[in-house]
Amino acid sequence: MKIAHVFAANLRHLTNRVGNISEVARLLDINRAQYNRYLSSESYPKPVILDRICKFFNVDARILTEPLHSEDIRNLPQPTLSNASSEINKYWEQAAHWLPGDKSATPGPEEISDGVHLFWRRSMARLDRYVCSPLLIKSQRGIRTVKMYDVKSTLLMSHTTLPKDREYRGIALRQNHGLAILLFPCTSITVMAMINLSKDHGISTEFIPGNLTLPRGEAPTTRRTTPCILQRLPEKPQSLIKAARNSRYFSEDSIPSDIRTMLHDLEQPLTT
Image (cartoon, rainbow, N blue to C red; front, side, top):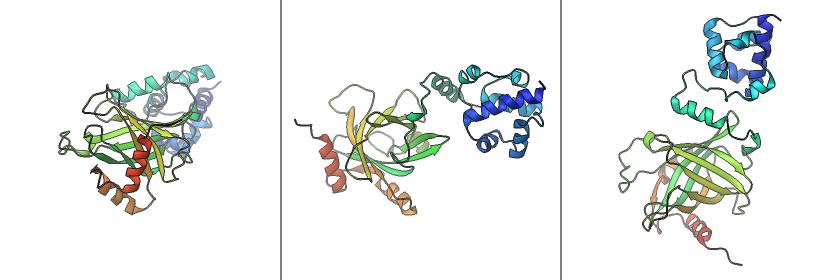
């Protein structure tokens, strides 16, 4: 079998693993027409392009001469999103390779929609306050990504920090009884937060209740877990203004009454 045919077959299998020819060509910065020529065995890439393809798919130059079998492809790490992955990206790529390969873990838009949300909760460090943080959900390459910002606080010495130092990033996952959002500060992977959202909340299509949990012990002056509300904002420019204005601490009297009532109801113990 000619090299071009072996490479074309291997590249088709690797591309199908990602699922979208146009997107793969864009990520690799290769002209779509040229990429199609590789896939149809009309040509094979120059060394610099081949190196880029190999780094992306985590393979070596043997894809030119040796057919890849389905077992080989299954055991490969996920494609690398950039040609120069950071050490932390490499860490997560390798870690994710060992997770269960179940695409059903990705929640659909009917469960939680893309766009800007407000994340309401009681403060974890200021027991007499509530907090509202802007939260963005975005679908990227089949993954529901989440970005959130901590509010500024003089108590926590974060009132002078840059937005990137208050940024959390993570993913949303489907669970048996709802959704889980895993969030990590951009400055560390050793501190995380987990938001559990109810599947059958019954409040309204605008609000999803749940709870926020931090991986730390109980303390008399701080919280480890607290009820929360995720509020979906309309897809309008005014929503960004609303998110910015509400990104702050609230007292018992200043928080919107409907949010306060819902959070209070979530705090009530279940009765039988």
